Length: 256
Picture (cartoon, rainbow, N blue to C red):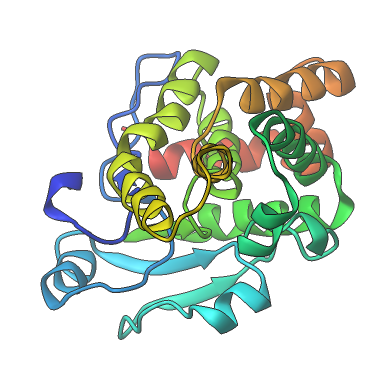
């Protein structure tokens, strides 16, 4: 599915075609990632339900986020919510969080903390384990997973699934950083709207920094996992309770 066919959802892409270390690749039309499913037009809904074959949506947002901005209705699609930040509500991304941090370096420090806690918190690990189980159990059609902007919680979930499928660090990082390209237009509009309201330039830079991803955030995940378990794969197997049989089942289901 070509991302260019969609104006919404923002940051939408198909993980199909990403290559594994053993020469296989992720099947197209099975694993989709995006930002929140809001403001879809009739054509975009038809593409998701038809050509994409969407069967399941996994929403990583909090109850507060989904209450403020519920996803658009997609008839016949199963929706499952795994609030990854449920035990760390103060770190849930949002406008309230942005207002507390006043410079770019503060954003970097905050995001490093968010990534580390999301991977290490027991509640988050339980939700990620349930996500893996759901993905493994879906034999047909597409799973689309998302959070607010489709960049941090969604980025970590994508890294976990791709690691289990045998994709190397370089390819995972390439997909992760693609968010900055995919969100460039939306981020620019957000900053310009704030500038028109007279928001100072330093605050605009801080706002923009919240809406991009940085390689150091995902590197922090790898470094933390390596220190704990030797590698990200072994960390996932240990803390998210994924067996070798589970991993092989995922690969049979999602690789070609």
